[in-house]
Amino acid sequence: MKRIVVLSLAALLVIGAMPALAGGAADGAAVFKAKCAMCHGADGKKVNKAIGVRDLTSAEVQKQSDADLIKTTADGKGKMPAYKSKLSGDEITAVVAHIRALAKK
Image 1 (cartoon, rainbow, N blue to C red):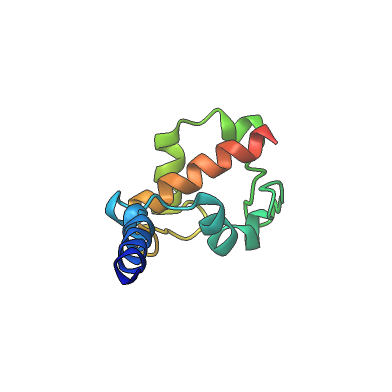
Image 2: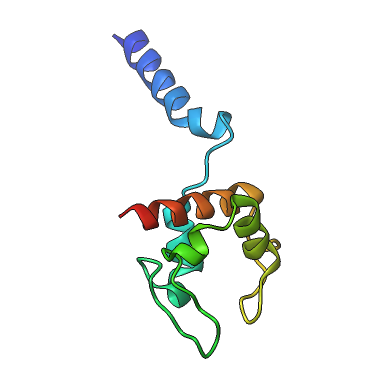
C-alpha cells in the first residue's frame, strides 16, 4: 500500500513539473491583464488619443507583423514604456498571440 502511495505521489510531482520541464509556456492573457490592460483595457479596445493608446483589435494594429508588435512591446513606442527589461521574450511573444486572439473575439 505504501508503495502505491509513494508511486502516486511521484507521478503527481512529475506531471506537475512537466510545464516547467518543457520551458513553461507563458500565459499571454495573464501577462496582458497584469501589464497591458490598465491602458489598453481588458478587451484591448480602449482608446486614448491623448497618450497614443490604440485599439489593439483594430485593422491598423492587426495588419502589423508579429515582429513589429514584439518590437513595439519590447522597445516601447511614444508614451508606451519598453517591456524588454520587465518581461521575458516568451512573455512578450505570448502577449502578441493574446492580442491576435482578442481581435478574433
